[in-house]
Length: 282
Image 1 (cartoon, helix red, strand yellow):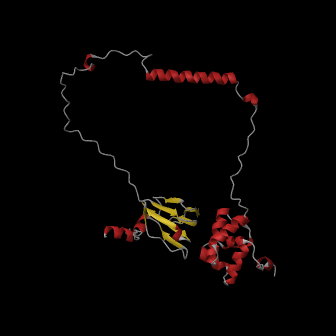
Image 2 (tube, rainbow, N blue to C red):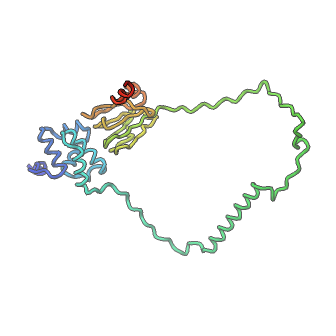
């Protein structure tokens, strides 16, 4: 039938799409089952298998989708990602070139002498303003009236009586500050954070050591990742228990209230070495 030739796997898969399709068919899985497992639209999975990466939103999406596909069929996602980068020619998205603009009609450019004159006038105006407000050179100061003259040190001045009806100014309330949730990648890991309405707050493949602060005003933020064991979760700088072991994709709420309910990450107790015990107890 027409179209079957493009779907038949080659004897020796060479591209990332062919390897993923061969792994899927070896397990007897349909493409719809992979889409259900990875939550990736089936049209994007078809584009990966056929090598049509132009149909994907970006190179970053292509890498993330291919790795998720590899995890779903039990393939090596790191090797798949490396081969896909080579297949794409190590050519990520590049910024569009800055358009060049030609100089307008030189007749409209003011003469150089006029420009210098304008600059000198501006400097003179600034100097005059500084002298007017910074000194009394152009303003005569009247002598102080008798009641404002300085009082001799030996003359006691009665302190003004406090008004009994006066009220102390109210202290300004301190701004409220919420708890800060931070995600720290301990290895290369794909992460997506959405709020309760499904709006995407953050999605990318994080590099080792990269951090992301979940917005404090986010409405029920939820985390989705296939390798929770490569992600450290902090609440106000304190670690919480890992969200998973990395055996399967997880989706969990990462609000401060939900994470505080989880047990804290156990601290490693310091143990004395046998040599130290021998010295302490001869």
